[in-house]
Length: 216
Image (cartoon, rainbow, N blue to C red; front, side, top):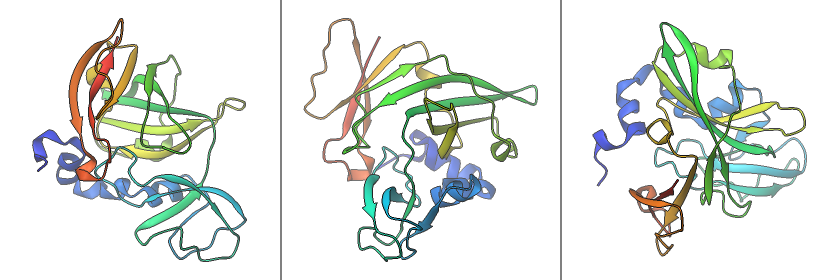
């Protein structure tokens, strides 16, 4: 059983009831004007789209996958409670902001690396020097910290925010330049790294739960 005090997303759900719409990833996609729609709504043109749960408090990218969808067809590939959205390609970044003296300041940025066929299993997060301005859609939030995940186009530097958290992400691990998630059955030793225990099961939905990180 997950303890509310140990799960920042659940704690934020109770702490900020007036901002719960930001847990809704379909709402986020609509606020940033992406092509998107819930199960039952056809895509505007055939192609690859990302499909994920509309709300996923378990995190870990559970249920997210890349799917080829056909124009004007109601697809059985999208379960009830899921939605489709534009599939953005580029660098996957996680960015923390904090509010200091009434002004939003970027705290850090980490780039994540995973495989297209397994979006929930990152094999490394690296601290990077990318700088961001907080988008106007997020400045309305009356909280003191937040995190967003985005895809940054390497050619245009345009960012496409697809997930917003009412808490920080890597604030407690900022001293590490490299963070390697360790899943069940993975080795817990690597030269130059130290192991930190940090368990996450995705509420039982992960075949291989995360047991910690290798950091340096």
